[in-house]
Length: 405
Image 1: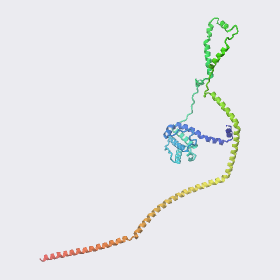
Image 2 (image 1 turned 60 degrees about the horizontal axis):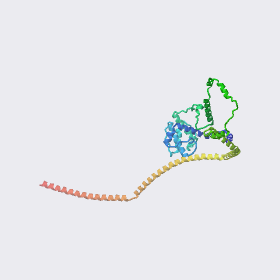
Image 3 (image 1 turned 90 degrees about the vertical axis):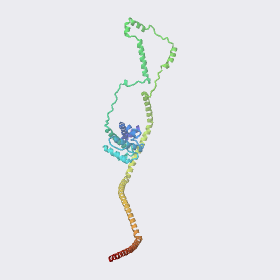
Image 4 (image 1 turned 180 degrees about the vertical axis):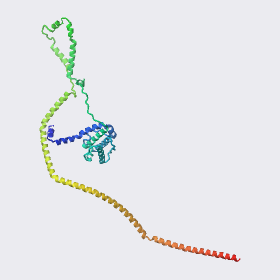
C-alpha cells in the first residue's frame, strides 16, 4: 500500500484520468446489467437464443472474441427491437462489417453519437461495445417509459426490537442477569412486606434483638467437609461459552491479529519496496529519455514513411480505376473475337463452295437431260401432227365421196 501511495503521489493528473478511463467500462457494464434485468432479458433474450446468463464484466474484458462478438450483435439487435425499430437477428456466418454497419446506422437513427471507427467493435468487447449497448438499453427503457426513482430506505427500528436474541448463543452477561433475577425473586418471596411488619406489635424490638447478637458468631462447619463439597460442586458451577464465528468479538480479535502481522511484514518489506521504487523510477526515467532520443532520431524516417504511405494509397486507387477499364476492354475484346470467328467460319464455307465444280457438272447434266427430253417431245409432236393430218385427209375423202353420190 505504501508503494502504491508513493507511486500515485508521483503521478500526474493525466495518470488519474487514464486510470478512470480504464475502470469506466466496468462501472458502465454493471449499470448495463441492471438495465437488462429491468428489461427482463433472461426470459425474452436468453431463453429464445438458448444462451448462458452474462456476468457483470462480460463485455468489459476480452475472453472469447468470436463468442463475445456474436453475443454483442445479438444483444444489440434485441435492444434495437425493444427500442421500437425493426432489425433482423444476425447469424454467426454473416459478414461482420455489414452487421456492424447496420447496428451503427440504427444507433445513429436513435440520435446516439458515434465518434469512433467501426473496426473498434469487431472484438465484441471493450469500452466502445459497452457504450453502444448501454445507449441502446437507455433507448429501450425510454420506449417502455421506465423511470428510475430514488431508493427508499426501510424504516429504522429500535435497537431492542431489531436485535433478535439467539438462544443458541450463551453469553456470560445473560447468565449473570438470569442468576441475579432468580436471587431477587427468592429474596422477595422470603421477605415480609413493610406494611405487614408495621401491623405486628413490638416487632421492632424483636428484630433489633435478633439483629444484635450478644456474642461473636463462630462457624461450626468442618473445613475438610466444606472443601470436599466445594470440589464436588465446582464442575457444575463452570460456565462454558461457545465461540461463534458471527460474534463481533472474534472478528475484532482476527482484525487485531492480521493487523499485527501486516505491520510486522510491512516493517521488514518497507526497505525493499523503497529500493524497488527507486529502481523502477530510475528505469522509467531512462526509458523516457531513450524514447525521446529514438523519436528525435526516427522523426524524419516516420515522415518519409507517412508520405510513402500516402503515395501508395494514391497509386493503389489509380490502379483500381485503371484495372476497372482494363476489365471492360477485355470483355469487349472477347466479344469482338467471337464475332470474328463467326465471320471466318462463314468465309471458309463460301470459299469451299466457290472452288467446288460439282454444281457446274450437275447443271450440265441437267441441260443435257432437258435437251433429250425436248427432242423426244419434238418426235412425239411430229407423230401427232402426221396422225392428225391423215385423219383430216380421210375425213375429206369421205366427205367428197358422199357429195358425189
